[in-house]
Length: 471
Ligand SMILES: [Zn+2]
Image (cartoon, rainbow, N blue to C red):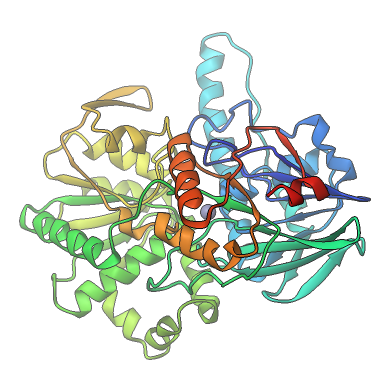
C-alpha cells in the first residue's frame, strides 16, 4: 500500500492524495491550489498520477481546494466514479461552476490587457464543459454505509462537521493478511458550535491522514467571537459605516447569517440591511435550507417555525452585477457579505476597491487567509494594497474573527484524534503551513506518544507491514 501527496503537503490548499494498493488506484480529493493566481502552474494533473488508470475519486467535501482539479482530471482522461455525499455533490456543483466562471472572466480581462501589449492570449484552466464532465461522474454515498472498490478497498464516509456534506473517510484493506484501516480526516469542523453537527467519533486506525490548518492554535471561543462581532456591529452602526465581510460562500456565510439573526432576534443591535452579494452564497444558502436535516437539529426548528425568516427580514439578495454595483451608492450602516473568502477574486474585490480607503468602513475577516492573498495582506496590517492594478490606501478598520472558522482548532483536532490514539496509528499530517504542522506534531507527540510524519509534495509513503510494525 502506497500513499502519495499531490497537494496540501506543507501548505493548506490543493488537497490530493493518491492511494495505491493491489490492483486499485484511487484519489482522495483533487483540489485546487489557491491564494495566488488561479493559473498557478501547480494547478495541473501530474502525468505520473495516471489519471486514466485511476479507479475512483473519494471526495471529502465541496470546497474548491478539495475538488477544484477534478475538471482537469477529466481532461486528463479520468472516467471513473467520483464518490461524495449528496450535500457535497450539490455544493461542489456550484463551487466548480463558479470557478469556471471566475476563470473565464479573469482570463478574458487579462487577455484584453495582453492583446494591447501584443502578447499571446491565455486559456482558462477549465471551462463549463469540463465542469459538466465532473457532474456526470458524481456518485452519491450515504454517511455510515460501506462500499467497495474492486473488492479490495472497503470505504466508509463519516460526518466531519466542517461544511454541509463534509466527510472524513475510512479505507480498509487487506495488507499481507491483516486488515488495515486508513482514516482521511478531510477538513474537520469545530465541536460544539451552532449550525453544524460535531465531527463523528472514529475508533481505531492503523494510519490517520489528518488536516492541520489550525494545528498551532485554538480559536477564540464562539461566545467571545460573537461578543466581538456584536461590538463591531454596534460601533459600525454608531459611525454609520459599511461593514464588508469577505466570506466563503459555503459554510461561513450561513454561519454569519445565523449569528446576525440571533443578534437581531435578541435585540442586541437593531436590524440593519444585510446584502448577500454573491450568487454562489445565495445558491449555497438554498442548499443548506434544502438539507437542513444534515445540520444541527436547532436549525430545523428555527426554519420550520419561520423564526429565521422573521429574524432576517432585512436580508437582501443581490443576484445581478447591477444590484452589486448599486451598493456603491448606498450609505451605511449596512453589511455586505461577498465572495471570495480570501479577497483574491469575486465581488468583494470591487467593494474593497471602493471602500477600503474610507474611515467609515469595517472589513471583518472571518476565515482562513492563505499566504499571498489580499485578505492575508489586510490581516497582516498592510497600509496600502494593489487592487486590480490600482494602489488603494487602507483607511478601513480590519477586524479578524477566528472563532467563526469552519475548521477545528488545535484542541478539537486532538479531541478528534484521541479515540484513535490508543490503537497507535501512523499519523500523517497535511493541509497546514509549516508552523501549524510543527506545533500540532509536537502536541501529538506529547499527548499520545505518537510520532507524526509530515510528507512533502509528491513524497510517497509505503504503508507495508514494516511501516505499521514500526509505528
Ligand atoms: Zn474545506
